[in-house]
Image (cartoon, rainbow, N blue to C red):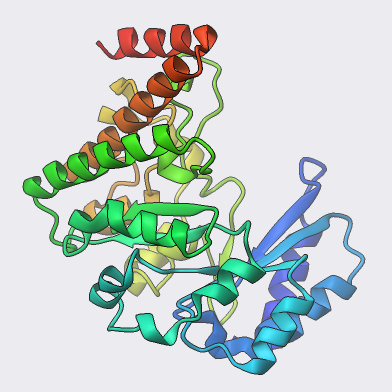
Length: 326
């Protein structure tokens, strides 16, 4: 993408926002965004110099962490209050090397933990690494990271099988014990689900924000619902078709998810569902099963912490959640 295209897309989007919005977050995406560091730097500094009617809350980019130079480090440290760089690192050294081409030794974990301590590190689990989930999570905590967001690689071509669910359950049970014994550790993402929301009809909807608060631009300025719907993640024909989807309409379609007790707290990925099954509201059976395991692990954590802390109010709340599930 050229700097001119990036600035034009941002200006058009921000100026079109109505009074419902008081701020925006801007994210650069890849491939590997740091391959275009000069573009990121120019566009970010241009953004910060503008006087838009809404605040630029944060500018952000994910990275695999392998391309940092001294120039990048200096700029990132100088702008760490307004620019965040989120590392993808998939657990311990073994897990990272299995998932990401033996790249572990080329990544300076201390730089990310020290410069962006409050930015969640992305830990993607694969069929090859799921059995090391617990060890990988502990490794990253001990490396100095405060927030770790674990997710399973999703997609029908990943190679997940039923036996991986048993492995995931065992690893989550180990993590439940770990969090109960270390309540000071901050849990995020799938390990911090608001499980009690299933009790309330008016609870906030945690489903994907695509079609509501997200817009994605490809390198040529073409607009897509999000990066998963763009040609970087699916074939061009499907990506173009996605630009005509009325997401509010499909959210009201009858689907198996409508009858699920966990529907309120399940975010699911509309893009992966559309890419792999042609239906935004139809997750794979494996994706449903793995989310349920995360949900139940959250219930165990909350219940055991409530008992440990003699928190009667939380115990009562979790009893209601469990009764509803039963």
